[in-house]
Each structure stands twice: as C-alpha cells, then as structure tokens.
Image 1 (cartoon, helix red, strand yellow):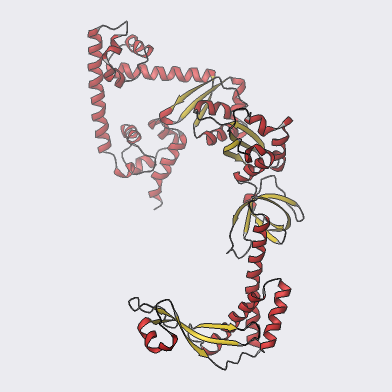
Image 2 (cartoon, rainbow, N blue to C red; image 1 turned 90 degrees about the horizontal axis):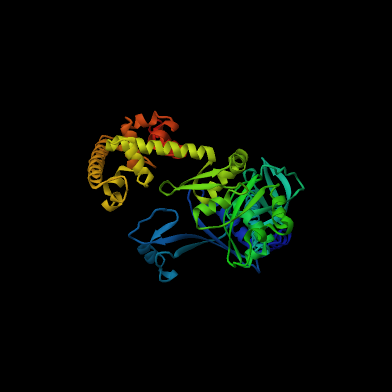
Length: 499
C-alpha cells in the first residue's frame, strides 16, 4: 500500500506536470477524509495526516485547537480549553492558545473501493487547483507588467469568449466586447487584462475591450513619447466602437501633443482605431482653463463664443448654424463625450438662439428690477447697462458705484438703495417662512438645496408627494435647474412610494 501510494503520486505528478509534494498533500487530504468518514461519522473531527515522501509510511492524528479559557469552546469537536489541554496533554509540551493537541490513530484500514473512489476525487480536485495555480503563475511571469494580451478564441460560452493565451484560459465577457466584435472559435483577439482572481473556480483572468484603459494601453504602444514621460494621458472617455476623446498634456513644450499622438498621416491613431473596430478617436489638448478645454474638446466644431456660468458649472457654447451638427455629433456623442471629459454641463446654441436667450434673460432681469424696486423700465435699463442686474447689487454695492452712474443723482441713489434693502429683507423673510413650512423629508433628499426648496415652495410644493407628482421639466423650470438634476430629485422623491 505504501509503495503503491508513492508510485501513484509520482505518476500523477508527471502526468499533470506538478510537483510531487502537491500530489502527496492531496493524498493526505484524501486519507484524512476517509478516516473521518470511517471512524468519526457523527463528529466534525479535525484529522491530520502525514505521508513520508520516501517510504510512503503514514501517520494519522486527531487534533484539537487550544483556545483561551475566557473565550470558551465554540466547536466542541475541534477545540479544547487551555487549562484542560495543559492538564490532560502535559506530555505535549508547554501548550498555549493557538497550539494543537494530538491523539494518534493506529491500525486504520483504508483498503477498499470506496476509499479509492473518494481518494481519487479529492486528489483530482487538488491537482486541478494546483494546475490552475501553476498555469496562472506561468502567465503572470510571462506577461509581468503587460496589460494587453493577444490570444485565440477556443470556444464561445453563452456569448462570452473563452480565450487561450498560452496554457491559460481567460474569459472575455460579452459585456466587455466592442459592439462590432463578432468573435468565432479560432479568431485571434487582443484585449486588456481587466482583473485577475486566483480564487475563481472558472477563468481566473477577465479580459475587456471596452475598458478605457484598453485604449490607454494601445496608445502607449503606438506613442512611445507617453512611456518616455513627454506626454501624459489625463483622461479618456469613450463610446466603445464608436467614438472616444483622449485628453493629453505635454511635459515638453516643444512637442505638439495632437500631432505626436496622431502620427504621420494619422498612422499612429489609425492603428488604434483599426484595433477598436474603427472607433473614431479625438485627441484633445488638456487645459486647466475650463472654457479653453471645452473649445478644444468640441473639435472639429468651431466655437464662436462661450458664456460661462461658474456657480452652476454650466457653459452656453455658441456656434454658427452650420457648425451645430458637428458640435452635437451623431446621437449627441460629441457634446456628451465633451461633457464627460471636461466635467461641465454644456448647452450648444446657435448665434441666433444665444441672442434670443440673452434677450429673454435681460427681459427677465429688467422685469424683476422693475417689480422689486417699483421703478420704470428706463431706470431698470440704466442699471442693467451699468452691469447691475440684481436687487442685492443695488442694495449692497458701494454707494460710490451707483453715484458714478451719470443718470442718477444722490437722492435717486439713496431711494433706490432703501427700496432694494427693503425688498431684499422681505424676500429673506419670505424665504425663511417657506423653508419652515416645507416638509423636512424634502430637505433630506439627495441634491436638494435651500435655494431649490425655496423656489419650489414658492410654487406651492410643500410635501414629498407634491414634489413626486411633478414632471421633470416642471421641476427644472420651477427651480431653475437642468433636466438631469431635476430627474434625480424626482426619482429620490418617489422612492417612498415603493417603500
């Protein structure tokens, strides 16, 4: 039996190309399992087995973990208190918590078909695990530092591609394939190593062709200046297989970032485009000036002017009618990717639309000044022409600024300032009253602010149900926020309906 065990271990080790010690470890696990089934069927015994690698002789023990007296025993079949271990197993040395006490098991008969079957299952499982670990280790050694690999599709599994890379099988999920990918068995495919999980029971390496880092790594391969530190990729956004924008920053001012990435006659970027299923790649020069960055990111559209709303992190981008299509792009891709790349909300307007919007804004400002200050249109227009557009500015700007307006004398300025401060105070009181009467549940919603709550409260929205009943465009108009922000608040307000 002993010689047979060693011969069996050596045969399997050679067949599976694994170390003999791994097979012996599997044999020990098999023997432990068999002993437990045979002698301790009704107990959760902890069995330890050691097989001599030279003779095949085996030693078998049952063991218990020594635990602190204060903790008590949680697993009666596997644990023993420290005081009891020291008293009953003093011959095993100075025992302390964390040690094991052992009782040797003699004359165990493990011959028979059942043992052979069980042992074979345990051994094969252990060998499969060892083989998978060895293959993964080989893979990591070969591709150490590399993030892009090339392999051959071995089979398709529920839409996913199982890709052979040397001896290793990796999985390329359907969700990580470019929409134009039509992979079949035998195809060669290039992908990014998205994740590695050594504990996974199936493929331990997951690949991706849609991850932004795949595009980054492909550019690094084609543009050596990136690895040399002359260029830095700041950010990548993409619609896989369709369009991408890559913001790059130069470290050496002598380098043209666009030309360097694009290459002679577009050779560098075209190579990446081809790999990504003809995905269009826009190389954008990075800038820490938001307006400048947006202008570059919207290329190839030509921007006529930009109006920046810093408080709302929005920009009105003005283009000629002929440039509108380019600025927005197919299915809105160009403007949407620009928003994602720059972090700014962008509204594309034609010159005519911008003029109309500005006229409406001026009309609204004029009406507000006339209403709040009880003044005529001509006085309101004088204020606007001098850059004063709010009641707060009239109330709290230095008096000399208002006195500097040619059309106003000292008495007019004092009267205007008094009216403005009264209107401002009245508005503050009204705002506080509205907020006090607003349902606290509204104030606790994600994205809700005092300004929004006051605006919608003025419109009669005081409870969570009132808010939830609003349409997105109603809330956007009432609160003066964009549709996306309004939609998030509406969704949050409706959550209690499903609770």
